[in-house]
Length: 340
Image (cartoon, rainbow, N blue to C red; front, side, top):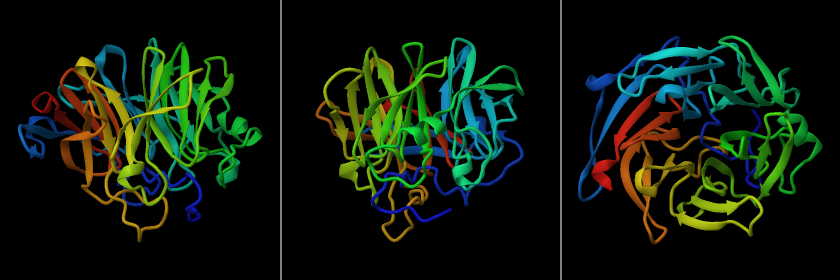
């Protein structure tokens, strides 16, 4: 893969170098006997446990039917179902386009009703592949339909910011008003995609590198990794409405933010992948075990809930437990109640 110019937003650095990701054949539940401990950042402790290990890479996640956790495994072209109590892993969908380069494939998953939709990126001809970059609807355990060709749209409607991957680098998706929102960390914009395949630009930005998404009512919350070298001041959560004014900052100060989620009591959490070493090539992930789970304070600063996370990529919350998916194919649980 080509080096990533500093002027572009492709320096997503969240999952873009997968050379260190094990190509595991199957996942293992960690359960209560997993490696973990108590993480203290002043005040009360948060208990951290490894729930699952051995996924074929880790990227996006969602809470789906039955309250289970669903996780994409990009190295295997697979979606797995994870029991949030026991960590038991079962295949949910297979046969999705495999990776062509060291990143891409099945990046995120979301449900409308009981139907799963998968975001697939960096598998098209512009990176040497032959599959469609876009939104896939799972019709069965091994069958799917491409409902939106996001790659073709991106090529036909290039962004105003600098880029060199014409089809873009889509990172996350979120259900929104009967359809989906999709971030493109390379083209620096959020797309709106319907179930019928209609695609439009909901919001476009400068070089902020949009990543994870959350919604509340008509408001969209967006994590920003920021451009290389991913300084803390550029790691922000922004909020905007579909037809409102420019985004407003909700919080700032996280290193290489990759996701944002609401927990109990309207508490907003963010996931920081960690410290990017300036000497590393553009597109490299954060340094191992420098990631953090953060809580947004009322003054727009972040409180640390858990630290020393190893290159996290996505976050889900079920009641008082956070589920953190990592680049290395693990899922960790964090007790957020102790830190509220």
